[in-house]
Image (cartoon, rainbow, N blue to C red; front, side, top):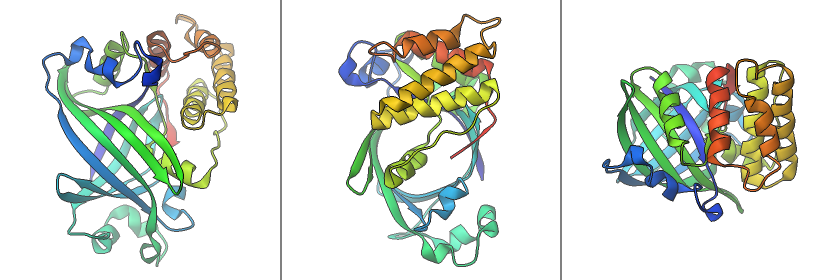
Amino acid sequence: MANEIELKLALGDPDAGGAAGPEALRRHPRLAGVTPTLTQLGNTYFDTPEGDLEGARMALRLRRADGRLLQTLKTRGQGGGGLSTRGEWEWEVPGPGLDLEGLAALPPMAEREPGLLERLVPRFATDFARETWWLEHAGATIELALDIGEIRAGERVVAIRELELELKAGEPEALWSLAEALADTVALRPSDTSKAARGGALLEGTRALPEASSPAGWLHRATLALDALADSGDETWRHEARRAFQRLAELGDDAGGDGDARALAEALSAEPWLTPAFGRRMLRLARRLPGDADLS
């Protein structure tokens, strides 16, 4: 097992132009002179028809990449504000289906009910192109992965347009530092919703926000609301994000800061709301308010 430590960032809509979209990232000075690798990834996610793995905040997938078939199990994550730590097991399998014997031998599966493995079926798919840069930054080695593609669940489709900064060596603080450097010119923001969780929500057609009582909890709620807004276009989620940021400001998170939460709430009235300034403020909040939420 490996512990995956990563900072997930959502990118702006490329149709907004300027600082939005993948092109702005590719032009960033921090990536100058670093040649990325390009990989096409096709993924099928599995669960029981009742969603037992999703209910336990686990994700199981088969990934096709460079002629190989990889099986991955990810367990419940901890974090918030885009930063997460979760358990991950990955191994190559002969295919074409799941390696149930190998899956049954993993510690997380020992807690599941007998017969669960036999009921696993494909649930949704993700297909995307991944551009990967390896960077040395602030004493750390970081894999920067830009994913562009889509999630498909039945007839429903949403776009994948995200950036993952995965820590390979060093301290997590370097992830924040790099993200803030990228946000100088690129419209991006923290995201707390994994591809697996997005696929599950797309399949079911429903989303829900967790209750919040602490500053970190309200930031997590705002982040999930923005994730839902990006996938659905439903303005209800913009209202929920604005309310969460306002609640953060009322709790006094701005003391010693720059009024970030209040400014973020106000910025959500503008179009486009996701700008480099928005992303920098949200990153500052997330860095200041370490999350401890259970993540899917």
